[in-house]
Amino acid sequence: MNPIELPAADARELAAAAAHSLNNVIAVLYAAASHLESAPNPRSLERATRALGDASGSALCLSAALSLLALPSAASLHVPAGAQELHPEDMDRLAEALQTATYASSACQDLPKTAMHTTLDRDTLQSLLLCAAALLRRAAGRDAVLHCTARLTRAPAPEQLEFELRCDAATSAGSSRSSRDPCELALVHALPVLPVLGAQLDRSQPGRVLLRVDIAGGMGRAVPSGQ
Image: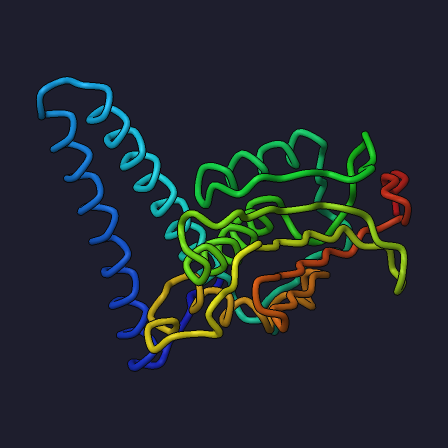
């Protein structure tokens, strides 16, 4: 992977955003420790458990953002079409990561039981979903219901695996701090790279994100050996 050269202003913004997010994780961990050190009672244990869950989720999202920010430029990518595989167990792991990081529920609609061949690898797919879900969660609040649906779409061609992230609560269009969020910076960085990876991201509708991934072979079938 080629090194990324960021302009000084972008590098400072990224460093500030990452430091802010990491400080939030540390603060939540301190809060969890405080609850655990207090007199043992069900309420303290509940608060500590929730705090640890929040810290783990924030750390996962920060890791996802940094992973996307490490993607090279579109001009530097040379990825064979359909060279990656998404297995049914990969979909389960994506759902687990979304639940852990953003408390989002997930459902799959009639997905194939065999591997789907894509150009986008599972780790990058997970990072994209986590960053998108984190921004929805941030805009709608921690108690809003967040859901992800994975389905196959056959029009327009080629066939695609579509992830729809949707929040049931009204979301803000943005804030003065939105550009300081690592997940926001990461998605902006990844957007021009996605076409090379056979993927598209649509954030045009408030409270909803669509991530579409091209599938090689059609109908979710594996690509025959040698193709």
